[in-house]
Amino acid sequence: MLNFHTSIFEMHSANNFSMKEKTPVAKINIRGNIETKEFPSKIGKILGIILPKESCSTSKNENITSLWLGPNEWLIVSNDETSKENNVYEIEQILFDGISKTNLGAVTNVTDQFTIFSLSGSNIFEVLSKGCPFDFESNNFGNNKVVQTILNHVDVTIHRKSESIIDLYVRRSFANYLWDWLKDATKDN
Image 1 (spheres, one colour):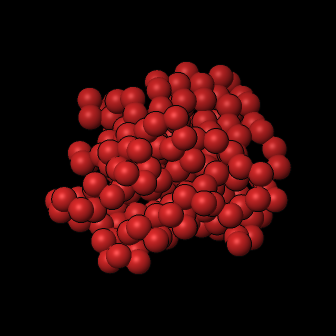
Image 2 (cartoon, rainbow, N blue to C red):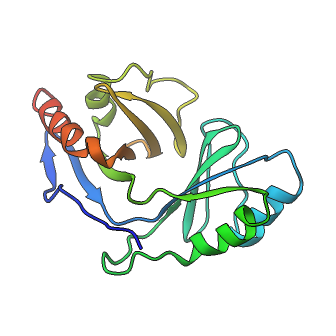
Image 3 (cartoon, rainbow, N blue to C red):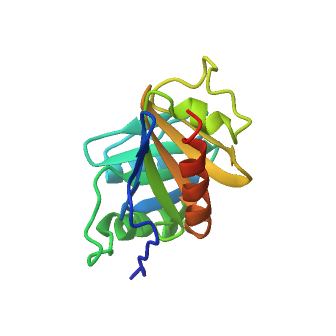
């Protein structure tokens, strides 16, 4: 059982930019060889989703989203928040039994490791560009794309859901620091 704690107790809106913490949301890291037949087939049967093969891409169904993190790594994220009292995830055990126990890959629950900031507004990328070297204007970073980068010296994963909505994944230990930085960064817009 995970020990879910959050220290972000507020929502923030300023200058057509809004943010809130999405919690708790199940997050499971999966590693395996996508080039074998057995690994992607087993994942597809368990999750009802095909893992994305292209860099920075995503795939989703009604319940989960899969984020491509590397050639052999994906982050499986619940599309819905769960109760803070119930943080046992059935899908984690099913994946563990079907993937890790059969030596097809590795399954790790990272729900407690990361938090998600849901950012929205017309100037999201202006705000993020103040502390991020990534080129958000790149043609390769359209809707439903994901990138791992640095934001004000903090490792983050950015999932662009649409032109005005993103999910920002940050390690929980840096959440307050990055939250405060984002609040400050919105003051000038």
